[in-house]
Structure formats: structure tokens, C-alpha cells
Length: 327
Length: 217
Image (cartoon, rainbow over all chains, first blue to last red; front, side, top):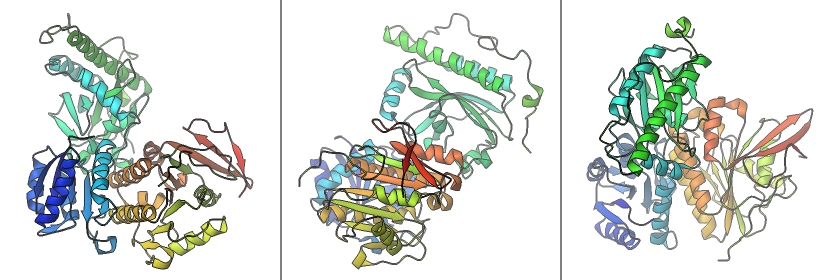
């Protein structure tokens, strides 16, 4: 896996040069700096695949830097490549940042470093969420559907608005889960655009065969300590994966609510129909792009003005629509 | 360095060989023999193999004693312990490295990587790694760092053609947590213990015995 962009951070110019040269020899682009502050600025540019840092830095430590990276770019892997033995590394205050560690006195250290960097990037070993078993294939499938000039905003906006009304929830959205974040193609009830993947519930939904329903987010151990969900006022969630005909899951059609609530089986079946409809829209546009058609034209002959397809309920369920609040 | 092309075998257990680089989650009741099962899965196939324990509920010397009790040979050059208990202390003679808290996932990961590298540097051709148990990590930390820690651990093991075996009592954590943690593993070994009889079943791995297989501890 050559061609990565790696930030090399070391306060010692000679050690920094040696590390940089080894990584360049491995076929990577390297940007170098000597302090936590400079490195944090580099990470802000968003183009860094991996950070390789000495532990002791003039204005802090490699763990101090990793902590800042986790806040700004949480998926970016960090490797401590250091003279410091484990007993000299003070992780107090940084117990949850988690880094890779490679001593400089490891035999053939520079070769080992190149391999380690390539592995942590390829295997995404420092992400704070579960990964689907076929993540590379899933991302490849996503690229086929997440097309430039997709021009489907109106269609998905209509679907999201219909869903928000149909289910009586605060927010309904269509989201694509890419490598590091979720992007909201349509979001009725809020103006969310992106969310770090580790903060999303949809990254768990794409692991499910059918749906993920969390009636009370604060009671679910996967999400209870997720501060971002609190900020977004998400107390209940229901999501159905957007699955291609080949079985790859590219995102989810979801509902959120600011109070805990239940979702009946019939409502989840309806949500599945919304997801099916959204997926058909993706499929249609992918085929048009494949055929070389002009995707700037809206391919829907008649935009839906009512709920898509038949629904399993003909009237709103009062218990659900009033919240179905948990005790 | 010669390359061992065969996978990992488990003498005396009703498990078929698993490929190099496999990470297994072992689930079962804490009092039903799960610790013994894990220790037996970590028995080295030969002296060129290494064994590494990450122990969170017993200290390093106790873990090594229990390993010896199931037939494990303690060769400090190729066997070592990352002791995550709050009372753990470093013990160079027995290759025990204390972290001080199961809450310190960063420190545990650093000690693990350091020890893993040193076992290879000492001549181990491949290493069996065992975690007993995952429960304290899940209980004391929030979920994001636990995922990071597990991905880092299993990624290292996968890349190095090692074997990873992590144990947890399902009753110690929420079902949702266990299900999502299981994503980090290639397969699962389920232990059940009823009326004094223990049996295991393998899920998610090819070419393994079907159904429940009785196991003697």
C-alpha cells in the first residue's frame, strides 16, 4: 500500500529526517514537523493518512498529540515510533486514545515502521466503531452509487419529508456511510450535513440484516456515552440499511426523535419500503450514469406525492405517533 | 527464520486447526471453565511458538501458574504477561509487565505491542495471544476506545500470522455490546456448562466440528 501521506513528528531534526527518508523509500509522501502544535495544524488540513510521532516532543508528548487528533480526525491512525520504553510513557489522562507502538530499537525498525503504517491504514485498526467484514467491498460499492452530479436531492428530500410526516418523528434522513463519516443526502427536520462515523448510529445499522431500532438511546450501551447524539437531541432511533442488489450496504434510511419512543413492527416494515424506494432511486441513477446518460435531468417521470408503494397501515398508529414513550 | 505454514491446532480440544492470523472470541460462563478453555487454547504447539497473556482479573503470576497447571511451559523468553490489574507489579524474571488499570487501554496497547515484538525478537516464530477477560475493559471504558483497542490488537495478530483468543462472559455485558464487539473477530467459540458437563460449539469458522462437542476440563 504505497502512496500514503504520512505526518512525521519528531523534535530531533536528524531522527525526523531518518524516519522521513525511510517512509519516502517505502513509497509514501511525508510531511514533517517538530512539535505538537505544528502537527495538529497539519491534521487540520485533512489530507493525512497516518501520523508517526516520537513520544517526547518539545511542547508535549505523542499522546498529547494523539488526543488532539482524536478530537479533530478520530479515525486517523497514530504510531508512537520512539526511544521511550513503555515504562517511561505516561498515559495518565490519555487512557482512551489508543495508539500503535514501535520501539526504535526494534530490529530493522524502519522496515517494520513502513509495514506497520501500511497495515494500520489498510486495516483501519484505530477506528472507534465496529467494521463490516467486507468493508473494502462495501466502500467500492458505495463509490458506484455515490456519483458526482447525482442530482437526487429533490427526490430524497421528498422521501425524507414524507417519512418524517408518516412516522411523526423529529427527523428523517437518507445517509451514506463512507470510510470516515456519514453524509446526509436528505434530512427532513434538521440540516445535518456530515457526522464523524464513530458518532453515528448508522454505522451499526449497516451491520444489521434488517433494521436497527433503539427505543431509548441513553439505555443502549453502544450509544449511552455518545455526547454527539445528545447534542443532536437523538433519544430514539430506527434505521434500515440501504442495500444494493449485490448485497453491499451503502447507507441507511433513518428516523430519530428527541424523546424515547417505540416503533411497531408495521412501522419498521414501512420504513423498509422507504429504504427500498431510496435504493431504487440510487440504482436508477447508477444505471443512467453507467449508460452514459445525462444525470443532470431528473429521471423520475412522476415524483411521488404520496407515501411510496403500499403501506401496511392505512392510518397512523396513535400510540406510536404520540411518542410511545418509555417509562 | 523458518515459516510455519500450518495453522494453529488445539491438542485435546474438539477444535480443528484454524488458519494463521485468526482471532477468536470465546464466550461462556465465568465459573463454567472458560478460563481453562482459553489457557488450553494458548498451549504452545512447540517451543518455537510464543504465548502472550493480557490478564485483567488475575495478576500475572497467577495467570502463569494457571497456565502451568494446564500443561503450559513458562519460558520467559517466549511467554509473557501484560498485567492489567490494579495491584499488578512488573516482574522481569517472569516477563510480567504491569499497566495498573484495565481502564488504561492506551497503556495496555503499548505494553502489548512492546511485549509482542520482544517475543519475536527472542526467537518466537509466531505467538498465541489470550485476553482474559474483555469484561473489565468494556465495563471501565467507553465503547469507542474499546473498539480501537480490539481493532489494534486483532490487527497486529492478523498481520503477524498470530492467533488471538479473547474471552468474555456474556452475562457480564449487554447483549448489544457483545454482538458489536464480536464483529472484530473471525469466529466464536461458545462454551456451555450444564449439570457439570461442558461443551463447546464453533460459529463462523469453516471446517470445524458441527454442533456441540463435549469437552473435559
